Every structure is written in C-alpha cells, then in structure tokens.
Image 1 (cartoon, each protein chain N blue to C red):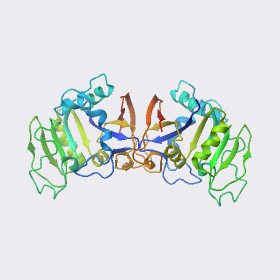
Image 2 (cartoon, each protein chain N blue to C red):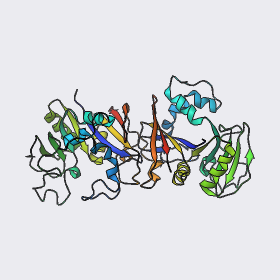
Image 3 (tube, chains in turn blue, orange):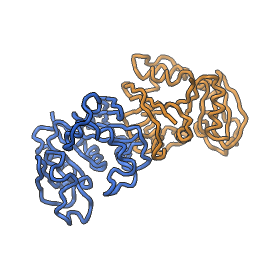
Image 4 (cartoon, rainbow over the protein chains, first blue to last red):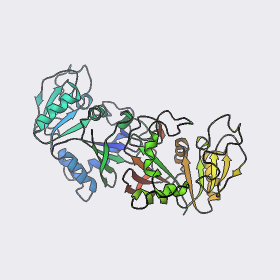
Length: 216
Length: 216
C-alpha cells in the first residue's frame, strides 16, 4: 500500500532550520549542524552523485536509504523550489538542483502562480499546482504509479499536509544541538493534533531516528 | 559520584505544560496528557502514598524508579513551591503537597524573598535560598550527603541550571501529543547550548524516555 512520507532533521529545541534564513543561507544560522549526520552517508551521496560515504556500519544509513526508497513522486512548497522574486518573473528558474536533480521522479510544486511543466535529466520533471495540498497530493499519487509520495517540505507545506490528513508517515531525525530559534515544524501545529504513533526508534551515532505513523 | 538530575515530560511540540497555566490549572490546557504515563506506575504511586500501579512489566516504571532513586536533596523554583501572592505575605504557606510531601529530603526553593526554613513529616524540610541557582545547588549538594540532587523545575529553573552548568543529567519523557503552546523548556535555551549526549533510550507504551548526559 503506497503511502505519503516525509523526513525532517530537527534540533533538540525543535527547529528544522536556524534563525535568519535567507537565499544565501537557507539552513539558517547553525542549521548545517542538523544535516552533518546525513551528508556523510552512502545513502545520501548516492542520491546526490557523490561517491563513498558511510554504509550500513552506521545505523543511520539504512534509515535514510529506506526513507528515500520507493518514492514515485515528490511534493514541495514554493520556497523549496526557488527564491521568491516576482513569482516566475524569471521563467528560466529551474530549481536549486542543476540539470540533474536528486529526485528522479515528477515533482509537484505548490504555488498560487501557474506555470508550465518542464523536464530535466534523470527522470526529473517539475509541475506547478495551484489547488492546495490536496490537489498536489492527488496529482502526485497518480504520477507515483503505486509508489510512495514524498513531501519534501518546507515546514509550512508539511503542516498543511498533516492538517489535511495527507501525511501517513514522518521520520524525525533528532540531533542533540540547540539552534535557539528558526523554523519549527511542530510548534505551528494546533493543540489537539493527534494520531502520531511512534513506530520505530533507531539510534545513529549523531541522530536519533523516530518514525511516526500518522493516523487521520 | 553524585550528580544533579531532572526529569521532564514534554509533548512532541516541546511543551512541559499546556497554554493558559494558572494556580487552578498548573498543567495548562491539555497538560494532564503529558503525565498519564507516569500516574499509572507503581514508581509514582509509591512516592505519592498511593497503592498498586503498573510495575516493571511497563518499561516506563523502571525508568521512573531510577530517576527518583538516590535523591538526597531537591532544588525548585519559586512558582513550583507556591502561588505568588505578595511573596510570603502569608507565612503559613507550606507548599502544595500537604503535611507529608513526596520528596522526603531537604528541598531548596529559589526566591528573592528570604524566609525561615521549616520541616514537615517524612524527612521533608524546606529552605529558601536567595543567592541564585549556584547557591541553591551548593546548599543542596551539601545537604544531599553524597546522594544526587534533583532539580524539580519549573522550566525557568531548569534553564538556569543548564546555563550555569549545574545540570548533569536530563531525562526527557517524550509523549506524542501536541499542546499547541504553553511552557517550553528547550525553546528558551540560547543557540549553541551544547554538551547534550544521548545516553539511553527506553520505549514505554506511552512515552519515549531519552536520557541525556550534559557536559559543561
């Protein structure tokens, strides 16, 4: 049964990115500390055309590999796709990832500004959906052809998906650092948000991986 | 080697208590949901003159029992001891816990308003320290006679202890509910707070227990 899933790295104080995020510093101050555990892994390097990296001797590698497996389509928010400069005033913006992005599936971008789809190398294509999270998820599920749909982020898109009952599984990779501010996923969810069931706990050397099933 | 330690229960969105805390509702809206896992345990009932409760068939019981063992003194903030009404204007206030509080050790209350010590039943005594967290910890360590010092809370007192390098071990019991607001421990710590090392992970049926050693 295909599902919708997401993976986030959070600090102990609950931030997915540090303070003062900008186009030049999308992770915010200190935010790179959230991702060091992943960058060094073979499962990450594989996806990003790198080489080597730690394999399954590091328990985080299998966790990341599973999180990234069986994905048939990706949904992401407007800001994850590109900088906001007059919304497609520059139609030549084709994402942050160059000509061969690491998704290798259709990617559906939530936006209020319609734009034509385009394709890049490696199976990547970008589509722009203005009907909200439900519409984007419906299109992604169809495109995924029986595989899972990954919700890439950012925080606002993930909250919309959780609120709409559109996220089935969330992998939270908890890193024991403090960012002191920034972008929080959970702090924006309303009281009484329910249905999070802890399914799996894996300790990596630098991150604790908590997989929640979300029942809506 | 005796240490200083604390145990907190937090929601997935990082709150130790829900919104709109008051004297009549010290846990805040929804905050009782953070403590249900503990109330039902033998380790909790024992300490609070209750009977029965779930034993070690529930993995949370041993975690709570260890957290509460070997405590020789307690430090707490002003608000945890009593309501703020003209600061000791009523010298007859003797804490929330009746004549036989569950601490059974000397308790050191941080306050700017000096007051005489008093004793209650069961080994409980209350002492009022106006020299800040370091002074309170020094007195508690001396009184503990080689046992551990427990920092009872609230959030502000715990943050002061962490910032001052006075907390050696923190047990975070993470409950998969959302409170949507309230009192956060971690969100008030400054960026770059460091030295949290995840030592132990125990899954209880309703809470995930994460023990951090804090290196200062």
